[in-house]
Image (cartoon, rainbow, N blue to C red; front, side):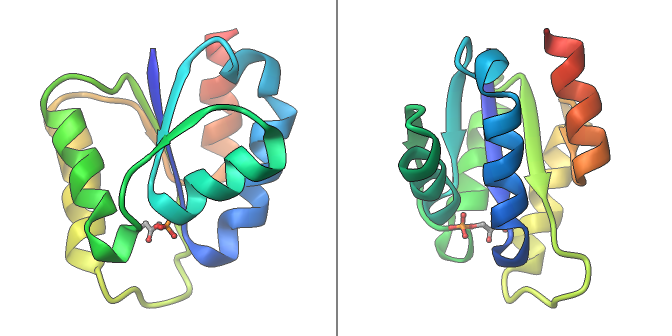
Length: 120
Ligand SMILES: O=C(CO)COP(=O)(O)O
């Protein structure tokens, strides 16, 4: 399955820890990510990740496009609900397109862990 990983800046450390925690499960899947998140995951965990553009520069839209094409099976998007984001419309569009296509999306660590456990 192709799994998309995205994290806002204050959630990036949580994302790296999550990927480390579920590395064995995630290593059996194809990972894609927005630019900064993906490069950090690659650097810190050694897992291969296909990196798209950085979120604020269009990466959320690129991943949304992959979802629309039916090429993503699961999204983990650790959002920062306490910091305004300049590209909020892109974030809403990404969540919306998951709902349009019934693609499971976790927007916090609790849901992310539940979905990743379900994959094992
Ligand atoms: O902004 C993001 C998601 O909305 C994440 O983008 P980066 O991974 O490039 O920081």
